[in-house]
Length: 236
Length: 64
Image (cartoon, rainbow over all chains, first blue to last red):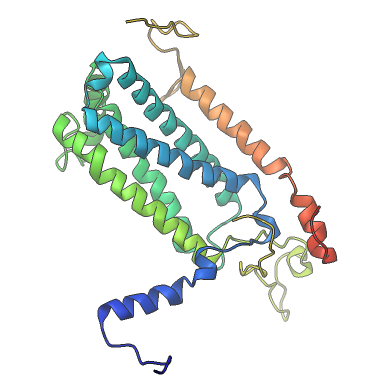
């Protein structure tokens, strides 16, 4: 039996081939990274994902027991606090990672989608957290919901959803928005795997140090963001 | 039910800093300041082992 069979024209076969072509196994799970990946900035990216896992885990427990559970049991209060502080860590680490990648111009070298999925994750995480605050079932939630209502109405989006509607906000918080955040984070990580981590600026390149281009002279080369070969020993 | 006291007295309205139309709670300002400090440290502190790996890469040897 020949090992070189022509793939059958099925959608599953086409999807498999496209997936393997976009992300071959050595790219999906690499065992080495360039030396410049050894930076604290990436620790904060990984810390964001770790915090997100804790958020999802504690959130699942809270949703199993219901939104009022944390008000009348110590263990419920404990998991509510785990959930809250994991969110604090998630935003803290994500913002530090975002600042670092902004100043590294991490969209270079065809990484526009990597940057956009990361930035949009932050934007979608904000309403995810807001809907959590208005799902607390206490006066704080009522205060935040009424304040948010005025703010959202002032920018004309109040017709699409109602932040004082607990059922709607709870559904957004435990399903729709987390689904979006997790999907965006997954896409972000897969895109990083596909395109590789953006290399640092090559400031020592002579063409860049000579200032603006002059007449009759070739303009300086802009770093194209193409990564050098991976070096074993730097964990991914 | 035993309720442990907070390290700080939280039984009061939040302290707020106002500057023109900007209004921020002191707690949020502290978190923002901490993020800036951590960001500065993240880009300035060397990553453990990074120097050894860079030297090993240039010389073609194994990192220590």
